[in-house]
Length: 308
Ligand SMILES: [Zn+2]
Image (cartoon, rainbow, N blue to C red; front, side, top):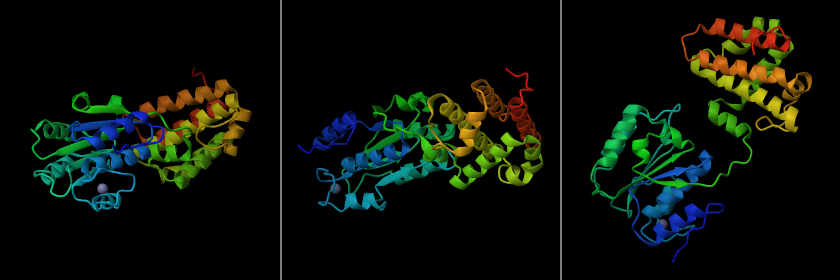
């Protein structure tokens, strides 16, 4: 018996050990977890076990396939990731083309689709057809997601679902970068602009073009910038109540907001941002939207708002 042990993941370890010792398994697996990096890591171990012609061990040196998988140079493993948060149909079509015939080198051929919840609808339909085709090519699918509720149910029902233990302890900057697709520099620029809004919203309106709009001038980028602002106020609230932050590592500017404002004001701002994020879904004039947003935040700070 060659057992596979993955720390803190007993269920996954059990499934992988079983697979490592017999060939019988599912045609498709859906790994559900809270950390995308770990999901990627586990999906790769999973694929090595499915592909390695020997019994897989941690550092398999019996075959050169495992090392080629590690370096991303193995043709019978195909990995698909979302680009700009979407996976398009073309990706699935080229996958089908590639996997028309049986594997030559490995025990199986494997494709991984990371963040399978980001398939657009035509890609999802195309994938479903692929999953429904009778398999005579020993092709096995591994999907990952951090949000199973957003995965199309007809795909979920075709998979063995593997729920991983949660591993993410602290969210931090890495998390913000991941959910907003922004760089650390961009995130810090947004924070700087937020602190201008907080200190002097009239000044912020006059600076909004050069400090903000020149960088965030599409709906999508604006939405991500608003997300950073939302998390800042959430952290201000965290700091006020629990004396620590989930995202920004006790940022001084956010501490100041927490120290100078009541919980009620901060909560009002969080609500106001959420409302505005929704408004962005409709057609809006971006310049007008931002100036209204800045003024709205300023009014809440000064207690002039009658929002509730
Ligand atoms: Zn191997």
